[in-house]
Image: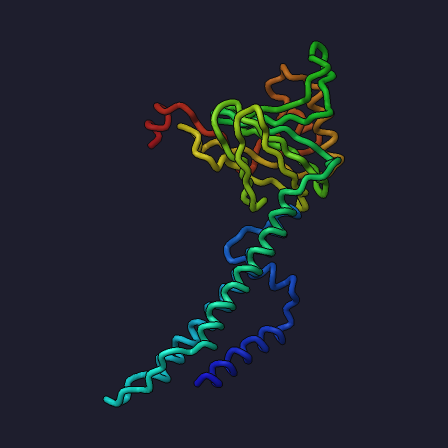
Length: 295
C-alpha cells in the first residue's frame, strides 16, 4: 500500500512537471486567493505566500497518505491482537526533526521578504506625504511648490478628499516611491489590496514610512484598515499609477492652480489626460437622513 501511494504521488509530480508550465507560470496561477500584486514588493510577498501554501499542501498530502495507509493496513480483520509497538526512535526522530526544518525554512524566507518590503533607499525617486484624518485623506508632493498668484511659495502642492470627492494619490510607474504617513487624530491604516500590504498611520510626532515600486499603470482602490470611527468603512481613496511624464505634469498643474482652488485635483488630472474623478470607488453620502430615506 505504501509503495502504491508513493507511486501515485510520483506520477502526479511527473505529470505536473511534464505539463509544460514554467515556474513563473505556476506562480501566476497558484495565487491561492491573493490578488495580483502591482508593486515589486507585492510580487515578493505573493511568491512567499504561494510557496508557503505549496509546502503546506505537500505536508498535508504526506500526512493524509499516512493516515489512509494506516487505516487500510491496520484495520481490524479478526479478533487477533496485533503486534504492539511501544517505541520507535526512528519515527519519533523523523516527526520531531522534520517539522523544525520546515519551521526554520519558513522563518528564513519570511524574514528575507519582510526585510525587502521594509527596506528604505537613501535616495528614493519620489516622496509623497500621506495625512489621514477622520474620515478622509490628504496627499502632498514634497519638492513641488505652489506657483499660483497669492500662494505660499514654500508650501508643497497637495490635494485633500472631501465628502463629495475621493482623494487620489498619483504615483509614477517603475519608480521607487517613499510614503511618509501621519495622522491628525487617531490611528488609521493605509491599505491598497493590490499592493498586498498595509501600514498603520499613527499620530505625530513619529511618522511611519515605507517604500514601494509600482509596476502596473492603473487605478486601484485604497482603504483605511484600522477601525477609526463612524465613517471608517467609507474612508476610501484611490491610487492612480501613471507614467513619470504624466506624474510630473500633474504636479506642475497643481502648482499653477494653487491651494485655494477647491477643484484643483480634478482640473490637474484632466490637464494630463486622466479621469478627473475616482474610478475605483466613490464618495460616501454623510447625510444620515438621506440614507434612511433611500433605504
